[in-house]
Image 1 (cartoon, one colour):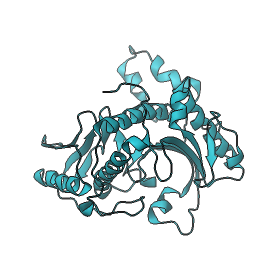
Image 2: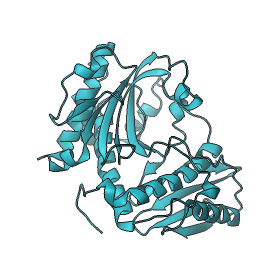
Image 3: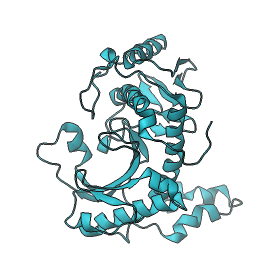
Image 4: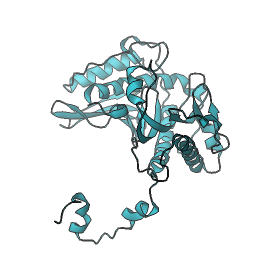
Length: 326
């Protein structure tokens, strides 16, 4: 396995695999969408990065629970139930239609019957999963590289997330757009565009600032980081952000930073954090967010790590009953 921290991921080398894997994640993600309660901004539907790939996390099914995991190290799709039952599918070159059929067969073996809408979303010219023989590529090396990058980016995004005390999303993988993202909110509502679809209406009903990583496609020849503020405030696109390689794309209404520029940076972690922080501040200050109020104080950052482990249990646990003692 390639253990380079930020491995090369030229889209031209794995585009067919990326498109196939995108459809496979949509099938798995739609199962999570079908079974989980609706959460604000659709936070019930993404997948999450693991030490081996991507997971749905546990999902309810009657009085049972199960999860579906992409293992991008040993290249399996694993089904794990709370009753100990498991099933697995090998990740290999095969059509989306065959993958869909194998998935539903595995779920049936576990006594799980889930109905999903089989039309892919957020892509041009979608093909229903059960009819898609077009996408059938799987390059294990590049699938693994993609996951390795997600592991590193998630770590840095969580560091960025930790600085913010307001409402903030988890760091999660949206299977519709095939990207890893974390989003901050001002706490104020916003109006989606009048012609917005259902997904957009519930995603963009609040002021927000989002940063993410995307492997490319749709006219972009490689992976990149992106950042946007919604609604976009006047003057946002003219703001100076870091690192110097970042630029504003008017068609997307987003600041972009090419992944290859991050790879070439002397300190990739700092390049990503600088991009996330400066683009967030550019939009937040123009929208009038209480930026300083949302910053986590240094004392709070170190309080947990500096706690004396010899403290009596009653004192350590007192935070669970903040109104007690009188």
